[in-house]
Image (cartoon, rainbow, N blue to C red; front, side, top):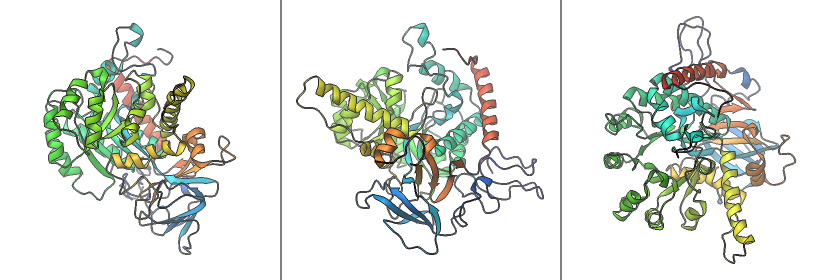
Length: 503
């Protein structure tokens, strides 16, 4: 039962997908994120879904779509089929004979792996758009007083209750499902108590998608962090066979980071950290690199303003880079180091970062990455340079938004491509919509034409979470009401006055 469930309200559809039955006043169908929409309750939005698809009781054949597998060994198909059974991809081919399977007609759709966001602060969902003009830290100008460091990290984040954490995490996760993001690393810097940490994990779980819980130290967490990591790992992540996994935050701009790294590696967790020159991290980063601290288990977020030595240490160690290109450009992190990471042969993924400043869909991230990279290369060509990098292609941008993200999160054996044996984390994108038709080039359509409105159907581990343009199993109106109530309380406690037309 999720935190929003209330057995005193018989007949209420649980926002996480269950059903309250009037005859017993209890939850008739446990759903909570990791489960399917239960056979005990069928979402009206799925009335035309073939029998056996919702509960995974039959093979499912996704038939006749333009299949973009993101696996060179599998290939792509102008018209192809994907067979799913028990939550996994069984076969991908031009034509599959599966007479007993339930068929999803994918004609006019692009069938591809779900998007992977390797850095998203979901607890900040109530702050959407609040810092639309915000920069990272105060530069002394009055118009930049509402900066991220002071407004969010040192003020708003300090007043959250566990209930606020939960609804922010849940709503943010559901919203990204709607946009086709089937996997996220949630950088949840909101661990003021074990109850706050548990609420963040429950919100991730109840959204029902693949999630990596990033246990990052925030402000005011010194008394609990990282000592509670062992309890969290044992209680929530004892099994590897689940939708949720864990990453340890190792922020080097905060005192005591050494212990976080020690505990994370003791627990066998990847170590992720923000690396931003604006925060004066370059000397510490270089020092750690020289001491051999970096490894393949490191996920380095942003990497703006770093020295050539620091880059070499990270690349030689096999560390992964997560870029939030639109945010880095918009909030004064520094120029996104796309080409630097690519030239060094590093794994690079994409991330949405903060919705207080920009949307959390991967179409925005892919367009931001490809247009910036091409702008820099084109400018070099126009200026007369004889030696400049290749222009990024749309398929490259998709790769960074899918399989590279999976590799960075150590999930490439599970998701990130339409590969037989991997989990069926699959999205169907509408290529007949008015903003796309006629379909002439699949990668080009995904990167240069589409947005979240083109996300038609979403599967996570074979379970349908969005069907024909409508989310399943969630009372969105109720969730929005809960989120708005959280926003009102958080704003009041933080002393923020709502001004719908202010700066």
